[in-house]
Length: 317
Image (cartoon, rainbow, N blue to C red; front, side, top):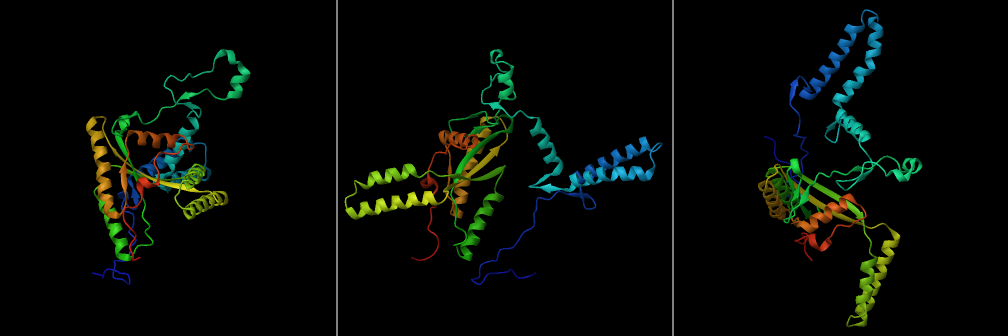
């Protein structure tokens, strides 16, 4: 057995692991999906040859069938972000046929009033359609009821500066995160977003509170910090990073909702070993996150203090 590679400080060195979520090969190097796709393309081309061989020479048919055969092979073997090309094409087809003007109301009128006139209705574009969201409701515990898709619970996560940790600390963080992933009993999604930050309210409050500070030096320092934030906002676009963890459980029952909420709290306990502060969201905070997902101009509630790191980065002061 080869010795385990290690770093200079004795910690195990990172090793690249190939993807393990691979489809089974059932016919040589081909998976079941690829075999079925190639078989369908072959049968389609063979049927076309049987129907046209009395009128079309074989060479002409081969020349005409080569582009569709190549397109079928590309569609069957090309993958991006874990999805095959035919799935992307089907999603694009559904998106092209889906209505683009949606309104969040179950009784949305599907046509404009008659008194608008044909000119105004043509200028307004296609008729609106009701917006059907995947979430039915958010219960009092903050669990999202997804109907046939089950129930989901959300939690806001902190982050860890991985590069500033030593080798043993990095190995410990990766091990704790891996243990949580291996213990997951259902679907998990980690969503990282970045939104513009408006510091004008914070700067105005800082200047207002600076007048009540007990010493002139403190007031000068507070005002100087407010000026610094003003210059910082003018010189660059400030972004707020937010990481949301979503766990889902199948089933329409209350037991599925309880399991989803329990898994969110279990994630908070398990990821604490990786120095990640995870806070499950209540009903109000979950509704705010969903509202921000539907409207980018809405900022989700909760500041950075809610998910600040719980441990100091390793090192001496």
